[in-house]
Length: 461
Image (cartoon, rainbow, N blue to C red; front, top):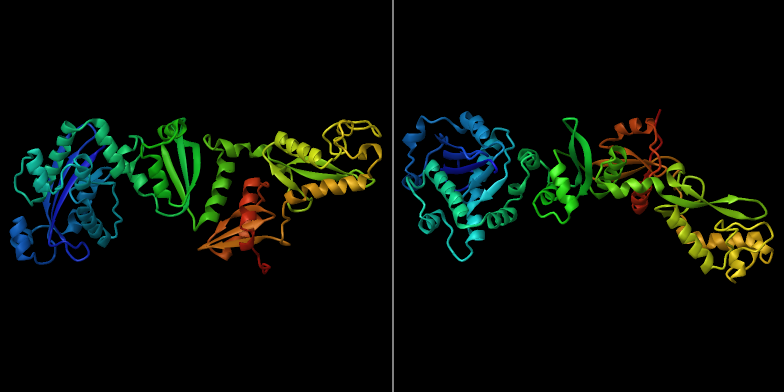
């Protein structure tokens, strides 16, 4: 069960930017079902209009000796912290509280559930969903309408009523639609989730090991960190793997970025650094390879398969293609050799003693470079020509380069991502640090955004 605060406010008017709170009523329901109630008049620091006095029964005289919101803010915050904020027309009550806290320099946030929307979701056959309509429809016990605690009690009664009228499955489905926090597992702190920013970036999920929440489970990227994480924890996971990930998560962290490039670069770097257990596919990067050539003499360029982690792609030796593993690379080359009538032996796919025909020549697939019918130089030229479409671009700058994205500067050298800074004065520290190993995922990202790269200006000593 989620800890809940059923909230109602009385105010001097309907506009949070200009009106103020006159009374607060809160019914707290803990995870074990225990209930506490709290009510407090508040001095709004301005006159209450006569029609509001008549509606609520709260007069200027009643609030004259009441404390201002600043004096009760700490109490209010303690009663709302870590709870689902439930109110009727919740945007009204939540907006007023956020405004009052903002004036005190407090960024108040809470997961919010509106019982007007909940009533519409569970009782779509009815047109009216005001609090008075709920009282009449569900037989709620009303005492002192338009006073904060009395109305908060009515909202609590409605919550209890729906659990009598509707199945747990129906309620959970409606809550998941209206409020993603309602499906949060008990081990995920709603306050932490609520602090997630509505910005691009990377989110990190950690599990528990040795009683510490420091086991990297997953690193993901998002255009909106908050939206993506809430979607993941909404109870609508699309796979058993995602459901298991949610159950294992004990801590959530994040890094905000200026945009897509920084998001993707950081995600790739963090996956390599942290080796999260659930980012399986990227861990296979250790096997990524490319074709290069060795000059074997007499015009013969012999293909050689190299792991990209041991090779600076595009920073010296010409490289052709990126392949997930050796098998994929060899299958590709074999198909290329057969299609272009190249030699199995000279291409390194089969062994044949010098001067003897390769298996391809015997099958009519080779033009005969292995038996002198074609020069080694001609064969090498045809092989290089067949691979040229896969040639990886060389690093186009004499030294490091940068990409400016929003207020961030991404620093790169030889296709290696050195890091991101906010000012040019921080670049020297990145240049002085050890270079990370070549990573094909980073290379792919940077190659896509090559046009945005600018050579780093000569640093002054």
